[in-house]
Length: 367
Image 1 (cartoon, rainbow, N blue to C red):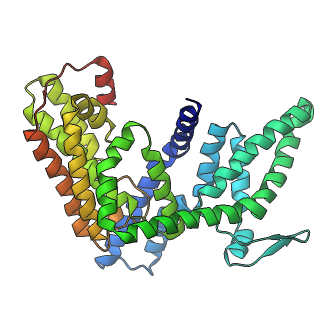
Image 2 (image 1 turned 180 degrees about the vertical axis):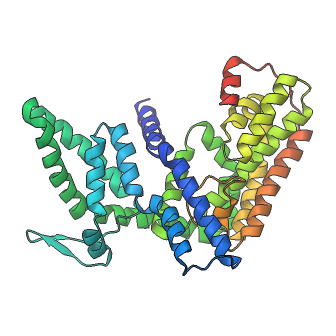
Image 3 (image 1 turned 90 degrees about the vertical axis):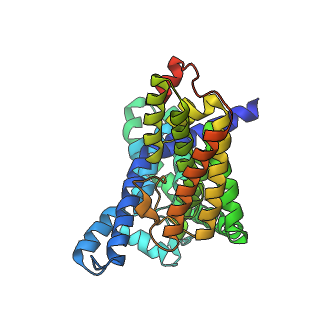
């Protein structure tokens, strides 16, 4: 039971840290995708000032992601969010950042500070804020309240900042690159098999909140590699959720049920599957089989396509530009296949479409 509670706390922490920035990351990803389309179509030159300005708007969220995560993780871990942001700022300070990212080793009082990549990093800042919360609590117990206000952040910035630069930075970079390389190795073994498994299982992971672990891998891939295939592999499962909900709507004869289904389909097509999942398909159980089938078949096709996301964005109709590039057309087809397979299977599977909708289900379906 204690292990389960610990695991639940980890999932809750990951969700609390990343959920506030998901929409920002999605918006930035869409902008980067639109820019890629404009350049490919010849509507805009990537050497123009217009492109450079818009590219800065799209890249800023990813470049300064450690600052955003410093704030959200500090609120979750109980650290001072402003102190956390200052430490993240130290890691991204231009002179320091450029020197360390160039591969040059710096020295602090003769102690080596090895090179590390801090922009767009995820792992390093989480370790940093975790240590900050621990240090601040310790210092607050030591110092009287009259000097605590300025002395705690003073020591915290120096102590945690140095530990991050000397240890967490290189360690975080190794972990980040290791995760990315490990995923790339598995993906290269069989992209179709990876898509089949992830596409079939992803919506089941959402039920238990375990999908945040997948999201973390995806964000890490974008930070470490500049692109990601995880998003493409589970993209069809999102459209499958919409397809199954639409089939329930077609089979239903109850006005309230049809209204719930209609709103759920629209939400799922724009990347929010919880209404369709918890309000329509999961209560009826059988449509979830169709969702898994559609997600699996679509995911396998997405794996074959080799499509990648140029930034982080939950797959949806609105975020399709994020996946523009090699394999884009086949990726779009994979999402359509996921939708159609789930829709057709749900139409012919045996289950009761018109269940009695509880108040709780209505709330979940309409939020």
